[in-house]
Image (cartoon, rainbow, N blue to C red):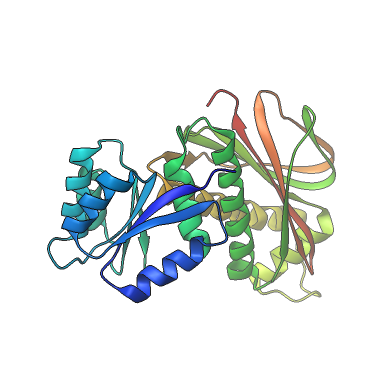
Length: 287
């Protein structure tokens, strides 16, 4: 597979080395490094990278001005800002300069590769590869959310879904629409025993405390809404997209069947001590 060239712009040798190391075992290849804005513009012209990582603080200009100069040369330049600060004002000014994505130091390898994968995609709203990237982001958020909400560690796996229906033998399914762009749908589901176990943990109830099915389903619905909202926020941060969530709808019962027509669907499964907590995420075909 052809390596994707990346130019690193940062006046810190340590930061450059860390970023290069993060990309060393991926499909991204560091084609050059620049320690100031003038050198960055020159190397961009010479090396013609597919993407640029941009530090905010440079000796001769800030990262926003440097990005603006690069975009004057190439209006399609793909730039990821990596800064110690990440606030609304910085992002707004960066967007005006044509910066595609924003990360805050210290950046993790997963954040960096996710961001680079998004911005080098020809069309973030249409390519299957980026859909796959969204799924990895959803999987990461599911794992993190289960820990923050329930205090439980989980092993998470992802697979491409086949067939026209999502069949759930028995339990609860919370259906949340993904609106804006890209459009799709998320279903978070689990069996009844897992529903009660997770709901009790969230409410910090003991095994002997009474809980009705309605109470448990209300807790799972709210948890699913929080998880889906976090997933959408992460995707929006990775690329300038506008994914939103619609109010959840919940089904509790046996032999639940949900149509998968006209969507590309993926399974995400988190194995926990309460049982398996699953998410089915689908994006509209043609989006």
